[in-house]
Length: 389
Image (cartoon, rainbow, N blue to C red):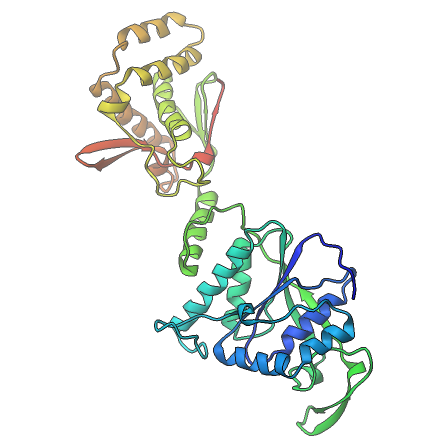
């Protein structure tokens, strides 16, 4: 038996229907690579009908064991645990994929399997989309895009046409065998297995794992979640505030704002960055948990002290102005002044920012909740840069 130098634990994952040959052909093709790749575990995503055909053809008839022995591949058995089959509402394994509901079931179970197996960094996934219905192949490829890592691979097995789906051909044996086949006209012909070519096409795919923090479980919801994140990343430019140079830049737009308003606006940016309630999330999306009230938050001594630090940078040549600011608002800023400043800031952004889609993200938003108003900025935290401190 060939000794394997282990770097990764190799998981072979197949979508399969009524052509079990794609399993043996893929295992064969990977065993012929240099260095060879042998499976440590095998998972077959299929239906009840597909499972029965695979068991009869590969296990009961001894094809898989024969291939292992002939080619020197370490034997990995296909057991009940190897089969991944969606179940209907009565907990019965489905026979086929015929309608929208069954398509969703297979999509969710494929996504769940790939997500779970990809959590282990010591594992490498080898996913074959050659078998099963087209939707199964799509879901497997899509799931790998969502959760695949740099080491994971996606394949399609290609076989010489006259051997393709031949019920007597499962892999290319070491010694030539004569089997029966059909010609282009459908007439019976004799085939020599020495003429067979099995190619494994490795398919490139975009890897989103680690770049998007997925929270959802359902495949459809995962796609929507990923799309929202991508849209956010593309649509929102950087929001840069430079305290020492006294400017705010949103994308290519310079926002002209009075220095004391820059100080006030920066408090909301720092609130987003320093008081995020969900630091484990890469993206804010619709989250507003960092928003604060005027009375219990913005009028407090704490916020005045924070503003005083920025005030001293913005008015670096006028320390007396900062001292006056601290004296005037030593017990907290007035509600009326805060509201006036918010109004002036939003007016300035409205006047200088041309993109209508960006305005509600960059302005100071007001949201009513539980009888009081909360204030904050909706722009993504990853897009905020505070400079000149």
